[in-house]
Length: 310
Ligand code: CP
Ligand code: NVA
Image 1 (cartoon, rainbow, N blue to C red):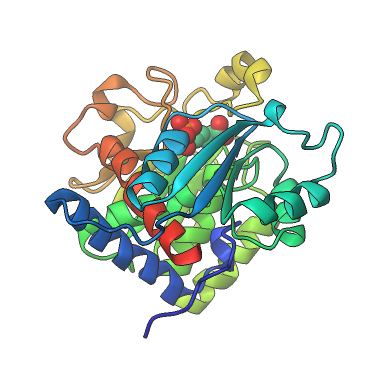
Image 2 (image 1 turned 90 degrees about the horizontal axis):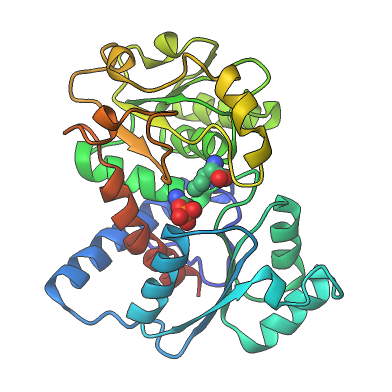
């Protein structure tokens, strides 16, 4: 039975019920098919989405803007500097004002609490387009992409090699919610946050799946169905990039590492990739790589999210 998600916000995957996740996937597949065949699907005719960005973006910006347009609505882009937000006006007042004009807000920013507050004080759905803590739209898209390629999620093993960052957190939540095993290898000092690991362990226990955190990539990658990586220095950490390169040496996804995964493993990356740093060109461009399918699917999955929430 369909779950009514109208009016809800999407701040992190852990807030979603399993039925809601599969509802997003079902609608994503249907909208993808409609786009392919040219069948109209303007379920958000006349709706307005505000898109606030405090960090750069290629995929998130373009896919949300194209997505709301294809659903019959209108997207408005704001650089954080275009708004009074946080400079001379509080998040709570901004949320109340924007709620009088718009039907939904997508926001990419640094502090996750700002997104929580925007949703708390506003009366329209808020969609997290990446914070320092989570990237739910990306990981919902990634799981949808795995489902397309492998026809199942439960019982698969995803190995994440790299920084315990927003991607690692959302992957922990996402994989554990759907019953996928997830193993993470990060250098010490760069592990995912304990509270996210613990929330995910609770999900995994319920679903009968496994969460493992290792120091060595080789231990995490054993028998994996999916190998995932992300940049070693995220947006806002540019100054640490050189130091991080040293700390992450040995964590590159390359031909040597992938040998330990299943032969038909999928290589995934949220992109942008720093080719030659966290992953080699050879792996990015190999037949196992689905990085551009992930990028395309951002459009279909976010259209489904908007259609369900707005
Ligand atoms: N993966 C992702 O969110 O890409 P952008 O930073 O280009 O939006
Ligand atoms: N961890 C990266 C993800 C980019 C999509 C960042 O936050 O910059």
